[in-house]
Structures are given as C-alpha cells and as structure tokens.
Length: 256
Image (cartoon, one colour):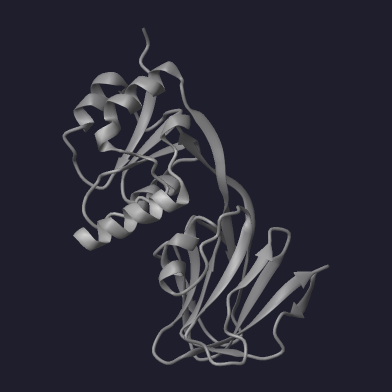
C-alpha cells in the first residue's frame, strides 16, 4: 500500500516524529502539511505550503498554538485519522496582500508599519474607482499600525489591544500609540483596498516578521484581502471552542 505523502514543518526535533516517518512518506512535495510547534511554526508553514495544513501543538510551556486543536500527545489519533481520511479541510482565511513598489507580499498574521527612530506620521485612504478617498481627515502620528485579519488578530494585534476577530476575510487596522481624536481599531470589509501614505519621518514596513523596506515621506503601500486561501485540517471530534483555547493559552503562559 502506497504511503500518504506529507510535508513536515517543525520548530525543533521531537521524539514523536519517528512515528510520522514510519507512517507516511515525508516529502517536500506533498498533499498535506503538518506544522509542529507554536503559532510561528504555523505561519512559516503557511508561507512555504499552499495546501491544507494541520497545526500540531508541541505542548511546550508558553507556546500558544491558537489554531491547533491537537497536540503531540494526540499523535496516534492524528496518524490513524489521516490514514483513514477522517478529517475535513476548512478555509480558515485569505492572506493579506501588501503592494509596495510594484511587488506583492502575502501576510498570514499581519502587515506592520512601525517607526524607526522618532514617530512616524501617516494618512489612510480607501481606493475606490481608482481614486483615493480619505478615511480620516487628518494625519495619524505615533509608533505605527498593524494591519491584520482573523488569524493575526490573536498575535501582535491582541498584544497591542486590538480585537480578537472570529470572522474571516476582513481587515483590521490597529494603531500603535498614535495621537489623535480617534485611536480605536478600524474594521474594513474584504472588498476594500486601503492605501497608507507616509507624511513625516521614516517607518519600516514588515509582514509576518519579515522586512519589506524602509518608507520615507511620500512613500505609499496598499493592503487588501487577497485571493490566496489558507486552508486548515480539522478533526470533528477534536475541535476546541474559543473558551477552551483561551483557557489553555492563559494556563500555558502562567507555567512558562
């Protein structure tokens, strides 16, 4: 019997990997990917692999694993159910597209505009019918902003006081220590394209902890929900509720 071909992305070696290598054909070219570790490993897998991903928690203290319903302790269950085809593939989110200087980048967690030395001043527009329309009638100044969707809402966005988003394919703009009468996050639907223009000082543009480039006054970049889907593998009888996930994450942080 031909073994199922899988790809493995991991943050370190685990003894449970021996079972995977024995049960499956582990290859760079595969139909499914197993991301073993924390949320950072899941994001790396989503960059490397375009097919469905099964996130597996490593159960290390302090490891979030927000999108993992299963852990290394469930390895026998995972192997058995993948072999039997007893899993579902669900669309989790579309990646965020960042356009800058003619190139496109695709973020799983977030795009980030951050100041370098001083504050960075910027203005936000909606692009409609090829024209810019100001969202706010004034310049925002501060440490920058996070642009995220539902996946990244539990990462840096949450730490910065942004909302946890439970619905897919929206864009959330969360501001970082900005001055102005309106500093609350903005939620925008998937049909919108947003353009950010640097007005004063310099900033750095990043996505998922990777640098895109430094921005100077007059530079612009655009963000929107892309057509690139991120799909996840789930087992119906191993689904975690939001309450259970948050309880597990809080306990893990307390133990670290």
